[in-house]
Amino acid sequence: MFDYRIAYGCWLNDSRMKPIVDEDWPSTRIDDDTLDSLERTLAFLKQAGYNYLDVFGLITNHAWEDDIVSTVTPERREKVNRVIDIVHRNGLKLIYGLGVYSWGFDGIIARNAAVRGTSAQAMCASSPEADEIMRRVIDYVGETFDVDGFHLEAADQGRCECEKCKAFQSDIDYYNAINTRVARYIRGRWPEKTPLVNTSG
Image (cartoon, rainbow, N blue to C red):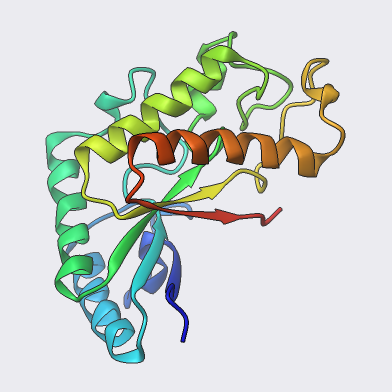
């Protein structure tokens, strides 16, 4: 028997019954079709023996705001809580899909030279300011939403190749280092939350 039987939903609308044709993937839309599809999917997952849902796109895909908090409107917060309620009501725990230094930081990187290295999609891993922004995202999610764990994904959007980041011996060392930083921070703040690390990319 496996203790962690995790259904990887990938993006929020990947289990959607009706297609979205008027916006680019990955969609972060939460509408009645999203919620109805999740209800059906979660009931099936519970019946199939899964005990976790791992999903990205609850809050944003590419667009964290500089202060982090204003990324989520009160309306969006209510919708995210409805999704979390569906997961918990069906007896599963929710793993929040978290881009590590990437996925969500495009605008911050464009506006903030202190976190910008050589990538437009991934913050510089040698930047103390990038570390602080990453911690603020984790704090916001963990303090605001009843998530049961974090899926850490660092590698599928590339990395910084600045002179400081070149000191890492390999890509594996680079991604392991930032995943470890984030996992240790989460463990220190919420030891009860489940960390999951995906090495894709």
